[in-house]
Length: 272
Length: 282
Image (cartoon, each protein chain N blue to C red):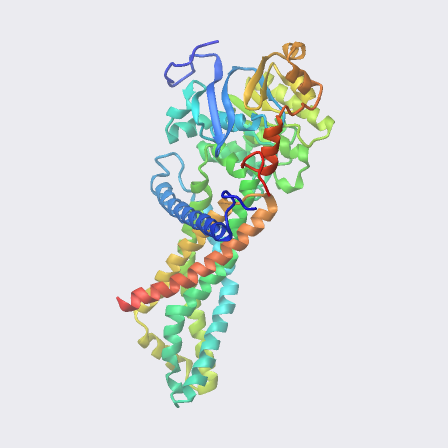
């Protein structure tokens, strides 16, 4: 016989949902605090005798940005050519394949370059950040930083955040050029439009606003990837298995956040 | 024993106690861990904190290192009330404390030398050459001279602990905290670490506070021993006084005798059935 204290299935589900909601809000709050604290250390670190080290930022920039150049180049080239193939195929129905440049230029700069760069960096660097901080936490390395008088946010998070804020837009810009170039190569091979004519038309079509649309998104993605990586890393419990779970969670959350933010950003900006 | 209550000032503290803990109460969530702990650690002594698993000794150490917030009570370290320190003052105080963690807590992405150098790099304006010399000196003290370019993953368990000691002492701290220094080591290496702790106290004049459950190690190095039991202080005194204690719980600890759980039947049933009533009809 179930007594009054035993929760029924509905209560258990409500309890589970409630706890998940509270935990989600906590994580968002923690992430927001992390961004605010990072800003504080960046501005006032020197006054607090804990300056943010340039060396650490460059080290992170190398890991986040420079080492990601080959994979970004490969994927951007593939995306550019894929857009050209699909665009020409679709427009051929209307006999308007020569207008494919319009679709490629806007799609790459406003959408695909920031999105593909964000997803690659989330998978590459967001996961690495979560794994690094999670491992440091279970090995008491974060405690060691505290007792050495080194603030972990200043030492670990700020360099990663700054590196991400610089390198993600830079990689997005790089992806723009690579994708547009390889799309142009395909257009040249398929339609016989010269690369120079293709580039001229692309430059004429695109405005600074279009470029900033893509780069603006990449800045938001940079913050999201860093914060989600750090919050998941900092919440690791239970040893190596916990690190694995946090890393997976960080990647899934980052990619989901990137895609949802991408849609929201596009909605807000295009209606503004 | 000197009285606490004097405001902390710059320079040497007025008391010869370097750590003064009064009525410290701490919780993890709802659970009370330390139930009003009071103790002192005198300058230049080796204080060993002992106790069984779950006695609260590691929690006490984390509080002494100012890594956790306490519920009530007070703690003065080197004359400074921990609760009254600003962020910058806490950082300055921490530069006078060294900690050798149980697992070493060396940064796996840095070499041994970089690990030891990190506090110098962060808190001093020394040039790189001088820092390198100091690192080599400290590694020499812990008999790891020449190992500065190895990664932590290339070291044995005992070497990792010694490297952790080198990092802990690189700023010449006034107090050195050691968390289970002998845990997981063979008796010979554990004994070498005990000798190292004695050397650091004698040669470098540090106060050392060690948490351990290794009896042999505790009796070898301790000037005084604090025994914690279920979050309360059971004993503070010299090793000889500890051996002579008539307290049954202390004798159980020293003789490695498991204690009977004096739980009544109703509490036992509660534990089995959760937090509900002692008897729940099916």
